[in-house]
Length: 380
Image (cartoon, rainbow, N blue to C red; front, side):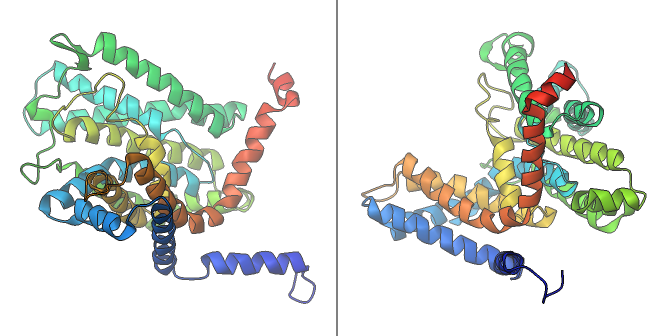
């Protein structure tokens, strides 16, 4: 409709759209971060904590020295890769939340390099390939269910997350277990570990893997014909199909790329995060990295370059949040630290959430259709 014939509601929606996304993304992110920090400061002040001292502790714990900076980067490495898993599929028009499960199987696959010997760096390369292949294979399940049966990727990826979680629980306890220490798997051998970049810290060469894959995804999606097809299918599947783009091919490709990224996140954790170099029973070192990657993708505007900075920001929050709990005469308890971090992340994610709302709504409609009695009868 033209401007004279547009309905008032349409004009209102366009005004909201301009308010949320009309500014430069960097400016929006800075303003959203300031808003989140203010909300966090108000919450801490209401409950009797000094927000300025707490934020100083957060900043000092995240970027106060070489060790702190290295720790922040190290904690952001797996989040780069799990954030890419969500972002790639969202660019293709799908709401894939299966990074958690794909990362689990990738981590378990990387442990298998402990059962044979190879010289460095080939041992490391084989572990990376094992993890990437496992992530791809686990991601193809939801993709095939979507293609052949029309199953919502939201449901299938959630189910696959639970399956992979308990599968890896079993592998850790009975198959990959270290006979000398039953609480963890066998350890990654020295020849298959990422080298430590800063002695005395957790930062390993896995950061190069994460950054390199993010740059690869950027070039692929924004500077190749294949990437154009993926993004076109996500923006308007009907128009893309009319233009000769295979929606099925872009769907499988996006799931496969996401699976690679999630599998590499598992390898980066097991092969590049000292001191364990193993999977501990209960998966504490892996738990929620896939879901946190979704927030990283939103804060990074679902763009590979933005995800790099968002992951560093999240790594800093995680590293600095620990210092907030012990800094000063009136330290901030863990529960309040998480509330403050949640307020900051939510504020920074709002602009991108508004932009991807149509994709979220489409996923919700697909979920409702899948759960409807009519769909269940047809499936039966």
